[in-house]
Length: 469
Image (tube, rainbow, N blue to C red; front, side, top):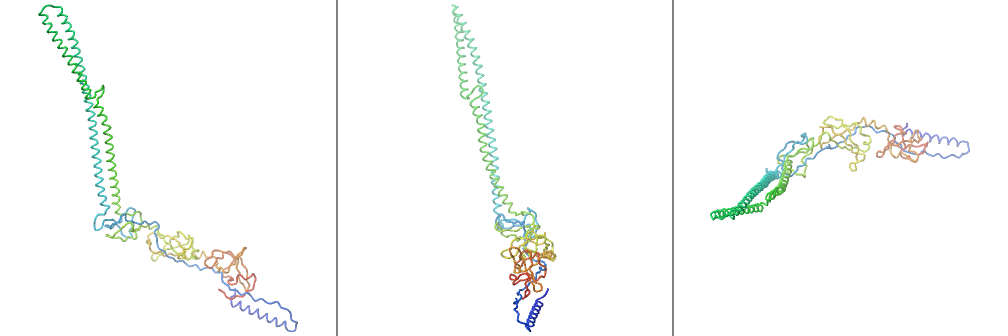
């Protein structure tokens, strides 16, 4: 390879020899027509070089990908703290308690006490209704059994009257027979004394028959009265039937009142459970395991659902997004060795993802890296280093300016200059990085490649080097 000075010296030597030849030919010979000499085409050159591998440094803010925001369930004032910022907690760990302003009970506590009173009253009303219903049902059954007893008593009275009637009818039959006999005897005698005695017996017998008939009539009237009053039938009575119907009526009425009392009790109990849940939520608990961050509350601090009280971060799932220049990003892949600085010591970590696009604001490619557990807190700064050794090993390709490369329909090529002669070389392109392009094949490191004038040079042409970049 020759530098710019050697190329210029050669050009001056060729020019001197040319003039000397012309002078010699002019001495003693006839003039001969000469072909004009085309001066060499002037170009500027550049070297095909590789990038020098250096570590890439970047920094970003640590974030918790699985963080949980702690929100107060209601407005109030902190009355008790159970943890402090940086405390490691499990799911369900109490964080702080909320109360009312100026030492007053929180409205959730007041509402729970009112709901508890109402629930107890509704439950007592239900129990009272249940007891009253049972008393009413017992009364209905008692009335039924009483009616049954009355029916049985009436039926027994009827049976007694039937027996008495039967006996009276037998007595009347016997008295009638005796009366007939007495009347026959009187007709057969003429003795005045006997006639008088027989008349007396006939009269007494007739009186006995009349009395018995009267008693039968009274018995019949009694039976009719019993039937009319009790509605007595062969197997039942009106009172018994009415009292029997009263039982299902009472049961139906009891079911309605008990159902209403039960519904009111359940509503009151549900309201109490809701109020209790709200009251219990005043002790704010961790929703997930992790480390409490951003926790700057103190006793007396106001809280509300609109303002996050803290963030619980799973410290094993921390990440940081760092930005690197686009051309550096091409040197990094998911296998690149990467470390994060913790104090004075680097700790190995890993790349989670590499953005396929350039951030429109920072003009950098964002790379997400994992942050080792228990190293840097959320919102802290992570200083990340991408290993120089691995980056260098990926840079065996050559780079030349874009203006050096000529693309035709058939091939891609450049011109390489050796001893002031331009040689066409077909190359294989790679990625374009800013104003340079990777040359994957066709060039050697430190080849002199035509930069300015590349589009006007042809293969084998003599060139004059104007400058070397």
